[in-house]
Length: 307
Image (cartoon, rainbow, N blue to C red):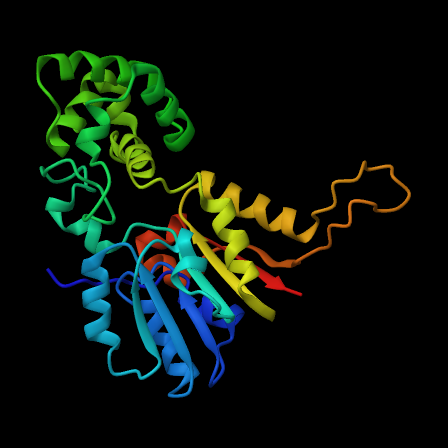
């Protein structure tokens, strides 16, 4: 299967990042290279773009697609480690698209999809770390329940966690079908019938977030990316669920107003200065894009400009 990616909120990303010839950018979630390709067209032969991804398949596909741009450099790694991956680099702009790529969802053996029966993997970097099977077969009932509530907003978290414990006593969960069966056994059929989406989607989201450690390092990573921006540089972040968006919003707010002095203090004595400002608010896709790309419905773009 070809690695494809329809870039979400592309026009809005280009508007706010405003790439110019000769500038330096980093795309921390390269994926199929849709956003990166358009940035590379605008920065020209004298510009530089570092495309970072944990998925070696993405790196290979994007390198083939974008290899004709002299300023393109593919980097295998996690955007959380931006300072280790790009030491000393200063950026005019950065982009993070925190969604799962179409390729990962549509490739059955990656284990991201609840529509296909496949090994329970869900790792974005298949060269390291625990699989989803490792996680669901060893996690405690309490921890699994909390993960479903915190990362999936799952109302049936306690029941799903209980059924998971029962099912894995019979045999270890090995496939996506096994995990879907846990959800089906936990949520009453009448409730599942009324669900607008697949009943297992929240469980799969929560497991994916845990397996890939997506949220815990996110706030630090955002600070590191802003630190690497040149004055006037911008960081654009696309999220696909409220938990991620809340982390990004609060991190940007904290960078814009880092003062820790008591609210009624006459003057600031903590010495913490604003790093920049959030611009544009919560940016959503327009009707035309929503009609063409269903993935855009849950996407939110936020942008931070460094002083």
